[in-house]
Image 1 (tube, rainbow, N blue to C red):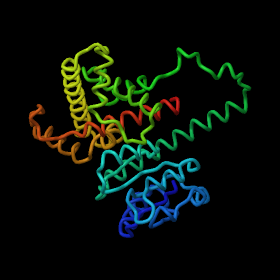
Image 2: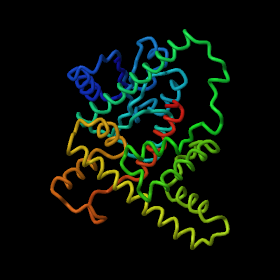
Image 3: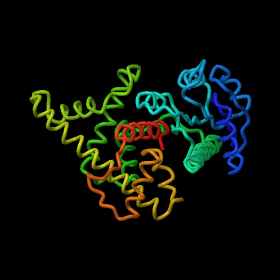
Image 4: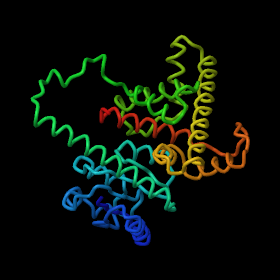
Length: 311
């Protein structure tokens, strides 16, 4: 795999390059200290597979740079930044990044993320090769390529697949989570994310209104919203327990590698693994705090990508 690193910190670029080379993950074919030095032509010329990019840079930040190269760059993007703003992270995912890693670097997390992205690239290339081979042998009638409307997958179908992978398909909050990503999908289609990602309170309020009907009183809506928030938080905590249990059993488990650091902060997963190892009671009194909005954002963008790629 061919990598390109864009970051204003020379030490960071050197450290990341060293990790890539030491682990034999590929070759770093270029570096830039600011987004203003980067363009789609340069990336295409160097056949870059994976682009690392910092969020905050002096002249042109990562978000603006991704907007500029987005239409042309076909590779994968991993954003690394010390910024933990939920709005900026959500906007980054909406622009098509594949992962967001928070500085300072954790070597294990970086290696795990790179390998997952590489695996996704290999899978996509394999699918394209198969499709190309088939198209050379057969002439497909356009009607055969179109599924009946009733057979088309919905974003909630892929959301259900992800919830199953995360170990919470049967939890009470799973229905709420599916309703939430369906609402976000409609929200983005109508309003985009120009004003930012909708707040969790707004999302819960919307799905509560839809469930109770427009004639419901404000008191009933508030009661249902709070109940929905609790169901979702319990489901997310259960997913964290599930991931931590897998990690304790087999740290190299593909499911753990693919989902744990993507849906949860690395420190949160590690803390929950420690609690499990010490047989700490995993009740609501646990000190481990889960970032619910990150979980829901990642669930949405992962389901949306699966829907677009038509797995």
